Length: 83
Image 1 (cartoon, rainbow, N blue to C red):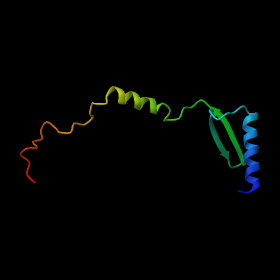
Image 2 (cartoon, one colour):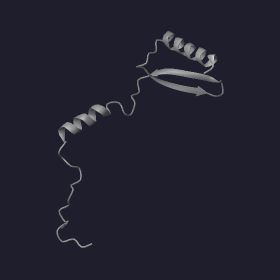
Image 3 (cartoon, rainbow, N blue to C red):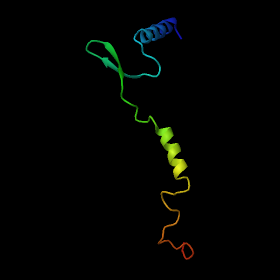
Image 4 (cartoon, rainbow, N blue to C red):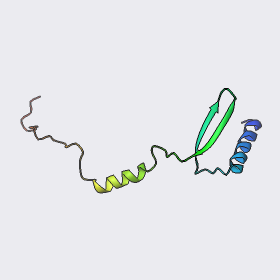
């Protein structure tokens, strides 16, 4: 890795620190081509997948033995099937 990319990384980290942005903040990052500007804004938007882990754990705990689709349907006759 060249030293220029390391310098840019440190500069970016210092910028984020000066702007009071930490690793837990959600950011909107936009590049404006006409002015060749990068716009970084804090956002309150939540990621689409925030909370999924907790929801899956809760679902599993509540319905671990409930099947969404039965293994055998009422109209199936497995004893008299022909191949």
